[in-house]
Length: 111
Length: 112
Image (cartoon, rainbow over all chains, first blue to last red; front, side, top):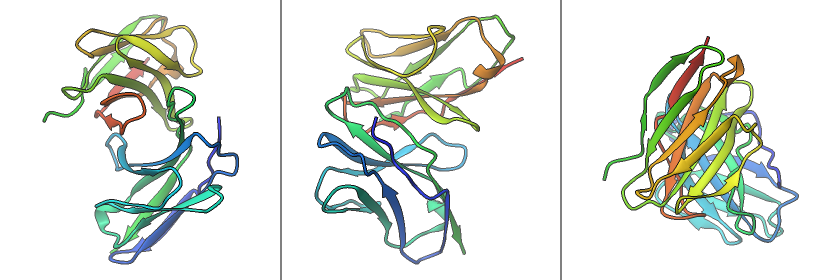
């Protein structure tokens, strides 16, 4: 399985943008890049996903490098409710779509 | 629309016993996945079901098994419980394989 590498933790201030990096140098052509987050005492929730092009939704933006070996989840204006563990996951559509979670990045948002 | 529900929410068992956990997916969702979450190992994939068939399996011993019913509800079973099986067991449902997964609140299993 292709692996992802994320920083263990990051800090941000409220109402500032947050850029959460993810490296996936062994990504294959059939891997989609997914981001999930897990708020304290809750199950993970889907944030966004993409294959090659940058993606935007109401929660965040996903910027994917041209060679697809890295990506960045962008929260445009962090709020206290965005404090969570963020997981960058590769999902191989050629291999039964298995989700393999790494350690994730613990995002702390300061008021 | 109701979310993913898991029962029971909390469970205490002793070593050697077996346990069955239940997951009801969001209405219309046909795929169900199971994960184990522990402080040491993080979130680990157990298995995924679609249309009553196991489509994918993680690296867990055969003591961990599951099934999916025709109404898409799923159960997972752990036999001969060990202390290390203490964990939060999460179920996630999706419309189909590869779609966005919606997670339930989990079942907290404690093995004494």
